[in-house]
Length: 346
Image 1 (spheres, rainbow, N blue to C red):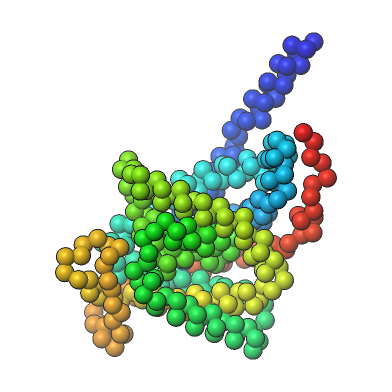
Image 2: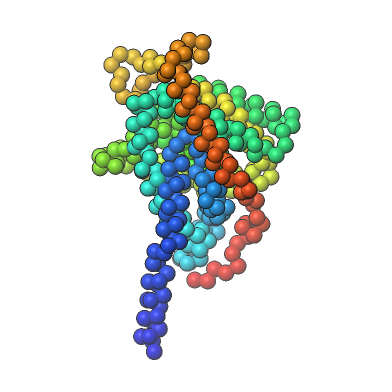
């Protein structure tokens, strides 16, 4: 009788960990999210809304907290996995990784070889995303306008700082980039890649992806990815609930500030720039670009192609917004989510 019970338990365990069609669907959703996350101006959160998994994703992330740590300390593995919806996050994470890898190398090459056109696409994507965020402000009043203006002024000041023109090389800065960029994952309309772009680390991260796909793996790339990943983890654990609290109780003001931040940051990705790098500088991350005033831009075929790329990119963001019509942009912070689970049986 005991042998039969043990066999039934082993069969149950095998069934529990069998990959199902639902798991593969989560991988596919992750691929779409990862592809979106690598493109500045396209938010993985927006794609999660379209796919109908946004609230489930944010809730799972917000459960990386002290309660989870206590469960792990008590070796209550099943309750811990259930609390964070581990199966869902694991298969979604695999898909996100595949999506990032698939597009990361492409974006790296486009930025190096077609700088003006790539920046035009980024400009259109982010300008349209700013409009999308503005629509999330339920009521525009004087306070919201002031909040947006302050956000825009701060961003415009920030992206013009020398430190962001030639960002630090140290791992500490990479860690900070991970902390800040990952927070954008739970904000529809805000792109984590956009944050990396204005912080000057987008090209470095996509470069590591490109080299890894070629199996060119170095100790430096491993340490960069590890530190960046650690920053992402801290950002998710430390700020996910804070961001959800702000959005649940001060959504309009928060979105107004974010909208202004995106508008002010557009200066960083103005597509009409000239390369003024010192002679002998060939590595992209050390190249220096100078803005060309619109009055000095030649109105030729290259100009119109640049404008067309920006318009099409912006149109794609508006299409994504149209597809999310009827979805809730920010799920409310439910009281039951903050309560500790009633059962933690070992």
